[in-house]
Length: 135
Image 1 (cartoon, rainbow, N blue to C red):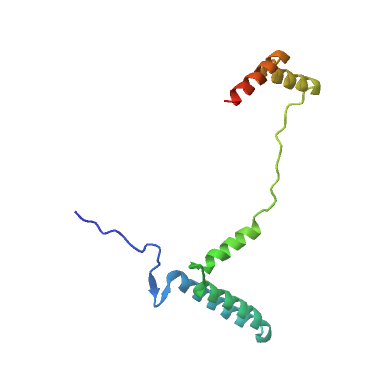
Image 2 (cartoon, rainbow, N blue to C red):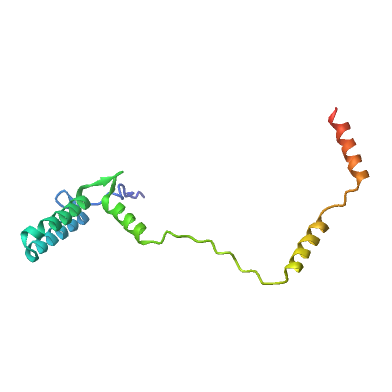
């Protein structure tokens, strides 16, 4: 029994001529906003907002960066601008005890883990290293 494996699943279907559904929505939305701006504001005041909205709609429909749609980068830029950028390191609070007690605990724990090294043992170790190193 053979099954057909879907291919090209990352490519959107062209629904409205050469445009995908998403591109069509961007075009209609941009055109609608330009029309509303044209009707609400006087022409000399509406030209700049109409150009900005129409330009953004054109970028969303046609412009691709590194083979990804412009909407992907626009969303990433907006989320970066909105998110907090200050990261603070917060030290954990330790129970406040007498500082001398903490120092004594640290000193005794270090001393108990180290072997006692006398001068004779140190000389024996040095001599054995010298003898073994000359071979």
